[in-house]
Amino acid sequence: MKYIAHVGIGNFHRSHQETYLTELREDWRYIGISILPGDVPIRDSLKDNSWRYDVTSWDENGVSTTVTINTLSDYILANDDITHTLNTLALPDLHIVSLTITENGYNESLTIDDVTLIYSCLLEGAPAKVKSVSTFGLLLSGLALRYYRKMRPYTIMSCDNMLNNGKIVKEKCKLSDNVFQRWIDTECRFPSTVVDRITPQNSHPRDVICESYKSWVIEDSFVDGIRPSWEKVGVIITDDVTSYELRKLCILNGTHSYIGYLGSLKGYHYIHETLWDPEIYKKVQGFMNEIIPRVQEIISQDCWDYGKIILKRFQNEKIFDTVERIMQDSMYKIEQQIIPIYKSNMSITTEWLINTGLILPKPPGA
Image 1: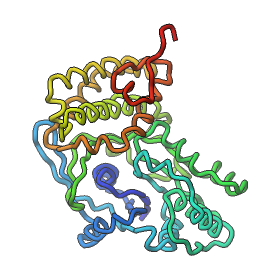
Image 2 (image 1 turned 30 degrees about the vertical axis):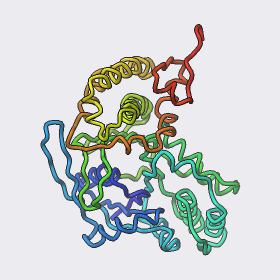
Image 3 (image 1 turned 180 degrees about the vertical axis):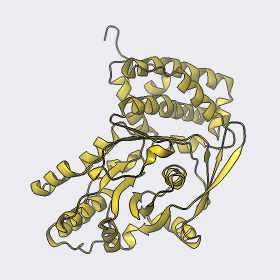
Image 4 (image 1 turned 90 degrees about the vertical axis):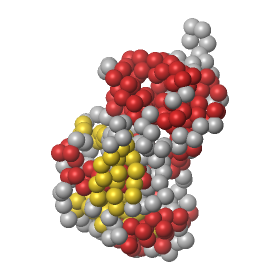
């Protein structure tokens, strides 16, 4: 059996990456890792059910399908037992560590405890006793332990909604030790990915609700080429994810954030009811009419059909996706989803972007 450790076993991971691996039916399993103490009830509920849970997906016609997920093999609370967690990351059969820690999770800097832990693994081959560890403190400590034991590194793969998420992860894996850093830079792999499946928050860990649509694009860059055969279940494996990133982040995520913004102004609770408002729907169409041509300028692909599909997905009343969820970390999402397009010398002049205070209209002739 081969393993992928996944940090951030939230609803999205369980509706998305786990379903692909369950469909694939290969000898791969996920080991869940959580940094957050609040995840104890989720871990305990899943453990009581032998790590199995159901995913119920709804299409736009109100038809549902339920699948039982059986690819989660364990769920570790990292800060309950840091040594056990690091020994798990050093398993010879563990080849990939993937992440869904939200866009804001990449803003954390290494703590003193993180640095202490990393260098104890690197120089002594044993984790120091520390109070807590952050996500990247954990990943770097795991790599340091494998380096000390003369093992191959693991691939680190972000599954969060960010432009160039692989490059962002690589930049987070920087240390002052030149020899170890050179090993990370030359031997590790940090593939970029594009993930998509609307998955609202849900109170029960064993019953995840989501839309029927799902997609996944992965850059084909893995340590020693070892990975599941995801392409057998519809995942796009490619050498360059850039066009998929820009299309999804700017047209889908950008529009989603815009709908959330408009819905919050009018006091709507759900995304679908926000779009049922004729005035808002017209504004959203105007936003998409503005941004789609600008994305097409970069990727040379027709995105109009993609935009139509997105609007239908957002109106799925069975999903009960809340405006509050979409507005979480909204300013950081804007920076990741729309500002890259703006910086590509294209004028984005909607009231939403101007009201953020992050963007000002371009002066005439600029």
